[in-house]
Image (cartoon, rainbow, N blue to C red; front, side, top):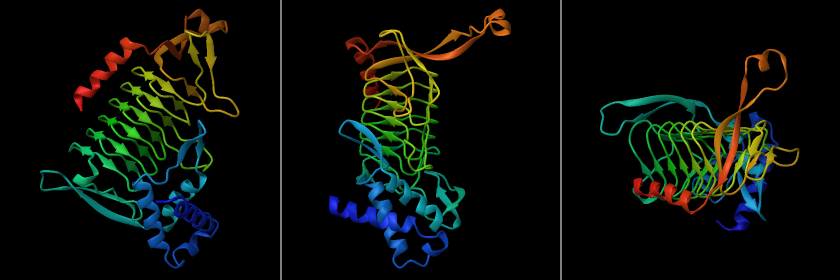
Length: 290
Protein backbone atom coordinates (compact mmCIF):
# COMPACT_ATOMS: atom_id res chain seq x y z
CA UNK A 1 0.00 0.00 0.00
CA UNK A 2 1.69 3.22 -1.11
CA UNK A 3 1.67 6.54 0.73
CA UNK A 4 -0.78 8.09 -1.70
CA UNK A 5 -3.33 5.35 -0.95
CA UNK A 6 -2.79 5.79 2.78
CA UNK A 7 -3.27 9.56 2.52
CA UNK A 8 -6.47 9.04 0.54
CA UNK A 9 -7.76 6.58 3.14
CA UNK A 10 -6.94 9.04 5.91
CA UNK A 11 -8.90 11.83 4.24
CA UNK A 12 -11.89 9.53 3.78
CA UNK A 13 -11.81 8.37 7.42
CA UNK A 14 -11.60 11.93 8.75
CA UNK A 15 -14.56 12.99 6.59
CA UNK A 16 -16.65 10.00 7.69
CA UNK A 17 -15.75 10.50 11.36
CA UNK A 18 -17.28 14.00 11.19
CA UNK A 19 -20.64 12.64 9.98
CA UNK A 20 -23.53 11.80 12.32
CA UNK A 21 -23.56 8.11 13.23
CA UNK A 22 -27.03 7.58 11.78
CA UNK A 23 -25.97 8.65 8.30
CA UNK A 24 -22.97 6.33 7.92
CA UNK A 25 -25.03 3.31 6.92
CA UNK A 26 -26.46 5.25 3.97
CA UNK A 27 -23.09 6.52 2.75
CA UNK A 28 -22.41 4.96 -0.71
CA UNK A 29 -19.65 2.35 -0.62
CA UNK A 30 -19.29 2.61 3.14
CA UNK A 31 -19.15 -1.13 3.86
CA UNK A 32 -16.61 -1.74 1.11
CA UNK A 33 -14.43 1.13 2.31
CA UNK A 34 -14.47 -0.12 5.88
CA UNK A 35 -13.50 -3.58 4.67
CA UNK A 36 -10.52 -2.03 2.86
CA UNK A 37 -9.61 -0.14 6.03
CA UNK A 38 -9.59 -3.34 8.11
CA UNK A 39 -7.56 -5.12 5.46
CA UNK A 40 -4.94 -2.37 5.74
CA UNK A 41 -4.89 -2.91 9.52
CA UNK A 42 -4.70 -6.70 9.18
CA UNK A 43 -1.76 -6.43 6.79
CA UNK A 44 0.12 -3.88 8.91
CA UNK A 45 0.03 -1.15 6.26
CA UNK A 46 -1.51 1.27 8.75
CA UNK A 47 -1.25 1.24 12.54
CA UNK A 48 -2.60 3.09 15.56
CA UNK A 49 0.79 4.42 16.59
CA UNK A 50 4.25 4.41 15.07
CA UNK A 51 7.73 5.72 15.73
CA UNK A 52 8.66 8.79 13.68
CA UNK A 53 12.06 10.44 14.06
CA UNK A 54 12.66 8.40 17.21
CA UNK A 55 9.40 9.45 18.91
CA UNK A 56 6.21 7.39 19.25
CA UNK A 57 3.17 9.19 17.88
CA UNK A 58 -0.52 8.33 17.83
CA UNK A 59 -2.19 8.08 14.41
CA UNK A 60 -5.46 9.68 15.42
CA UNK A 61 -7.16 8.95 12.12
CA UNK A 62 -6.54 5.20 12.43
CA UNK A 63 -8.32 5.19 15.78
CA UNK A 64 -11.14 7.19 14.19
CA UNK A 65 -11.41 4.52 11.50
CA UNK A 66 -11.60 1.74 14.09
CA UNK A 67 -14.36 3.59 15.94
CA UNK A 68 -16.33 3.88 12.70
CA UNK A 69 -16.73 0.11 12.82
CA UNK A 70 -18.65 0.30 16.07
CA UNK A 71 -21.01 2.91 14.59
CA UNK A 72 -21.52 0.85 11.44
CA UNK A 73 -21.90 -2.54 13.04
CA UNK A 74 -24.98 -4.39 14.26
CA UNK A 75 -25.05 -7.02 16.97
CA UNK A 76 -24.80 -10.48 15.52
CA UNK A 77 -24.55 -13.96 16.96
CA UNK A 78 -21.66 -16.06 15.75
CA UNK A 79 -19.81 -19.29 16.36
CA UNK A 80 -16.18 -20.37 16.25
CA UNK A 81 -15.52 -24.05 15.63
CA UNK A 82 -13.30 -25.82 18.15
CA UNK A 83 -10.31 -27.53 16.54
CA UNK A 84 -10.70 -31.31 16.64
CA UNK A 85 -14.12 -31.19 18.34
CA UNK A 86 -17.74 -31.43 17.23
CA UNK A 87 -18.93 -28.25 18.97
CA UNK A 88 -18.33 -24.50 18.72
CA UNK A 89 -18.05 -21.46 20.99
CA UNK A 90 -20.82 -18.92 20.52
CA UNK A 91 -20.44 -15.15 20.84
CA UNK A 92 -22.37 -11.92 20.17
CA UNK A 93 -20.53 -8.87 18.82
CA UNK A 94 -20.72 -6.12 16.23
CA UNK A 95 -20.77 -7.76 12.81
CA UNK A 96 -18.03 -5.37 11.68
CA UNK A 97 -15.56 -7.05 14.07
CA UNK A 98 -15.61 -10.83 13.70
CA UNK A 99 -12.65 -12.95 14.71
CA UNK A 100 -9.82 -12.93 12.20
CA UNK A 101 -9.38 -15.80 9.79
CA UNK A 102 -5.85 -17.16 9.37
CA UNK A 103 -4.38 -19.50 6.80
CA UNK A 104 -1.08 -21.36 6.52
CA UNK A 105 0.17 -18.55 4.30
CA UNK A 106 0.02 -16.15 7.27
CA UNK A 107 2.75 -18.23 8.99
CA UNK A 108 1.26 -17.56 12.42
CA UNK A 109 1.19 -20.44 14.89
CA UNK A 110 -2.02 -20.47 16.93
CA UNK A 111 -2.13 -23.45 19.28
CA UNK A 112 -5.73 -24.70 19.84
CA UNK A 113 -7.51 -23.95 23.08
CA UNK A 114 -9.56 -20.74 23.16
CA UNK A 115 -7.28 -18.16 21.54
CA UNK A 116 -8.88 -15.36 19.51
CA UNK A 117 -7.71 -12.45 17.37
CA UNK A 118 -10.21 -9.74 16.54
CA UNK A 119 -10.44 -8.54 12.96
CA UNK A 120 -8.43 -5.35 12.44
CA UNK A 121 -5.30 -6.52 14.28
CA UNK A 122 -1.92 -7.16 12.65
CA UNK A 123 -0.19 -10.42 13.58
CA UNK A 124 3.11 -10.86 11.75
CA UNK A 125 4.59 -14.09 10.38
CA UNK A 126 6.46 -16.02 13.05
CA UNK A 127 4.18 -15.00 15.93
CA UNK A 128 3.24 -17.84 18.31
CA UNK A 129 0.05 -17.75 20.38
CA UNK A 130 -0.52 -20.18 23.24
CA UNK A 131 -4.04 -20.89 24.53
CA UNK A 132 -5.96 -19.02 25.67
CA UNK A 133 -4.68 -15.65 24.47
CA UNK A 134 -6.43 -12.61 23.00
CA UNK A 135 -5.42 -9.83 20.61
CA UNK A 136 -7.84 -6.94 20.24
CA UNK A 137 -8.65 -4.64 17.32
CA UNK A 138 -6.00 -2.11 16.30
CA UNK A 139 -3.17 -4.04 17.95
CA UNK A 140 0.11 -4.59 16.10
CA UNK A 141 2.18 -7.68 16.97
CA UNK A 142 5.46 -7.94 15.10
CA UNK A 143 7.44 -10.94 13.88
CA UNK A 144 8.82 -13.59 16.20
CA UNK A 145 6.78 -12.56 19.24
CA UNK A 146 5.40 -15.13 21.69
CA UNK A 147 1.95 -14.40 23.20
CA UNK A 148 1.72 -16.92 26.02
CA UNK A 149 -1.28 -18.44 27.79
CA UNK A 150 -3.81 -16.03 29.35
CA UNK A 151 -1.96 -13.06 27.86
CA UNK A 152 -3.88 -10.06 26.53
CA UNK A 153 -2.82 -7.57 23.87
CA UNK A 154 -5.29 -4.71 24.25
CA UNK A 155 -6.81 -2.55 21.53
CA UNK A 156 -4.21 -0.51 19.62
CA UNK A 157 -1.27 -1.81 21.72
CA UNK A 158 1.97 -1.98 19.72
CA UNK A 159 4.22 -5.01 20.25
CA UNK A 160 7.65 -5.19 18.62
CA UNK A 161 9.74 -8.01 17.18
CA UNK A 162 10.86 -11.03 19.25
CA UNK A 163 8.94 -9.98 22.35
CA UNK A 164 7.91 -12.56 24.94
CA UNK A 165 4.61 -11.89 26.69
CA UNK A 166 4.68 -14.48 29.45
CA UNK A 167 1.63 -16.22 30.90
CA UNK A 168 -1.12 -13.94 32.25
CA UNK A 169 0.65 -10.74 31.20
CA UNK A 170 -1.78 -7.93 30.41
CA UNK A 171 -0.94 -5.25 27.84
CA UNK A 172 -3.56 -2.54 28.23
CA UNK A 173 -5.47 -1.07 25.33
CA UNK A 174 -7.02 2.29 24.52
CA UNK A 175 -9.33 3.48 21.76
CA UNK A 176 -10.73 6.65 23.30
CA UNK A 177 -9.82 9.41 23.60
CA UNK A 178 -8.27 9.08 20.15
CA UNK A 179 -5.23 11.10 21.20
CA UNK A 180 -4.33 8.73 24.04
CA UNK A 181 -1.08 6.83 23.51
CA UNK A 182 -1.48 3.04 23.55
CA UNK A 183 0.97 0.82 25.40
CA UNK A 184 4.18 0.37 23.41
CA UNK A 185 6.43 -2.68 23.85
CA UNK A 186 9.52 -2.35 21.67
CA UNK A 187 11.69 -5.06 20.10
CA UNK A 188 13.19 -7.92 22.12
CA UNK A 189 11.45 -7.03 25.39
CA UNK A 190 10.83 -9.80 27.91
CA UNK A 191 7.59 -9.43 29.91
CA UNK A 192 7.36 -11.79 32.88
CA UNK A 193 4.29 -13.66 34.07
CA UNK A 194 1.38 -11.80 35.69
CA UNK A 195 2.67 -8.39 34.62
CA UNK A 196 0.36 -5.49 33.84
CA UNK A 197 1.47 -2.69 31.49
CA UNK A 198 -1.16 0.03 31.18
CA UNK A 199 -2.06 3.66 30.34
CA UNK A 200 0.30 4.41 27.49
CA UNK A 201 3.48 3.15 29.13
CA UNK A 202 6.41 2.70 26.73
CA UNK A 203 8.85 -0.15 27.35
CA UNK A 204 11.93 0.43 25.24
CA UNK A 205 13.83 -2.29 23.41
CA UNK A 206 15.55 -5.14 25.24
CA UNK A 207 14.06 -4.24 28.62
CA UNK A 208 13.15 -7.08 30.98
CA UNK A 209 10.01 -6.71 33.11
CA UNK A 210 10.11 -9.18 35.98
CA UNK A 211 7.25 -11.33 37.18
CA UNK A 212 4.38 -9.43 38.77
CA UNK A 213 5.49 -5.91 37.84
CA UNK A 214 2.67 -3.39 37.31
CA UNK A 215 3.34 -0.22 35.32
CA UNK A 216 0.85 2.58 34.69
CA UNK A 217 0.73 6.35 34.29
CA UNK A 218 0.84 7.03 38.04
CA UNK A 219 3.65 4.57 38.84
CA UNK A 220 7.04 6.04 39.81
CA UNK A 221 9.89 3.71 38.85
CA UNK A 222 13.03 3.82 41.00
CA UNK A 223 16.24 3.44 39.01
CA UNK A 224 18.80 2.38 41.61
CA UNK A 225 21.53 2.11 38.97
CA UNK A 226 21.34 5.77 37.96
CA UNK A 227 19.84 6.95 41.26
CA UNK A 228 16.79 8.67 39.81
CA UNK A 229 13.03 8.34 39.74
CA UNK A 230 11.29 7.85 36.38
CA UNK A 231 7.76 9.26 36.08
CA UNK A 232 5.22 10.24 33.49
CA UNK A 233 5.31 13.96 32.69
CA UNK A 234 2.81 16.32 31.09
CA UNK A 235 4.53 15.83 27.74
CA UNK A 236 5.82 12.24 27.91
CA UNK A 237 4.41 8.89 29.06
CA UNK A 238 6.08 6.65 31.62
CA UNK A 239 9.03 5.19 29.71
CA UNK A 240 11.14 2.25 30.79
CA UNK A 241 14.65 2.77 29.35
CA UNK A 242 16.34 0.50 26.86
CA UNK A 243 17.76 -2.64 28.47
CA UNK A 244 16.39 -1.90 31.95
CA UNK A 245 15.68 -4.88 34.21
CA UNK A 246 12.63 -4.06 36.34
CA UNK A 247 11.47 -6.06 39.35
CA UNK A 248 8.63 -5.67 41.83
CA UNK A 249 9.77 -4.02 45.06
CA UNK A 250 8.39 -1.94 47.91
CA UNK A 251 9.16 1.23 49.83
CA UNK A 252 8.07 2.22 53.35
CA UNK A 253 5.24 4.68 53.89
CA UNK A 254 6.90 7.47 55.85
CA UNK A 255 3.96 9.63 56.81
CA UNK A 256 3.95 8.87 60.48
CA UNK A 257 0.96 7.59 62.41
CA UNK A 258 -0.72 4.30 61.63
CA UNK A 259 1.27 3.38 58.48
CA UNK A 260 4.67 3.94 60.06
CA UNK A 261 3.69 2.34 63.37
CA UNK A 262 2.69 -0.83 61.53
CA UNK A 263 5.67 -0.89 59.18
CA UNK A 264 3.49 -0.64 56.07
CA UNK A 265 5.03 -0.43 52.60
CA UNK A 266 3.74 0.43 49.15
CA UNK A 267 4.42 -1.46 45.92
CA UNK A 268 7.24 0.02 43.82
CA UNK A 269 8.83 -1.15 40.56
CA UNK A 270 12.63 -0.96 40.74
CA UNK A 271 15.27 -0.96 37.99
CA UNK A 272 17.94 -3.13 39.56
CA UNK A 273 20.30 -3.38 36.58
CA UNK A 274 20.61 -3.03 32.82
CA UNK A 275 20.92 -5.97 30.47
CA UNK A 276 24.38 -7.38 29.89
CA UNK A 277 25.73 -10.43 28.06
CA UNK A 278 24.73 -12.72 30.93
CA UNK A 279 21.13 -11.48 30.87
CA UNK A 280 20.98 -11.76 27.08
CA UNK A 281 22.21 -15.34 27.25
CA UNK A 282 19.43 -16.25 29.68
CA UNK A 283 16.70 -14.59 27.64
CA UNK A 284 17.87 -16.16 24.38
CA UNK A 285 16.89 -19.60 25.76
CA UNK A 286 13.31 -18.64 24.90
CA UNK A 287 14.20 -19.17 21.26
CA UNK A 288 14.40 -22.89 21.94
CA UNK A 289 10.68 -22.92 22.82
CA UNK A 290 9.53 -21.57 19.46
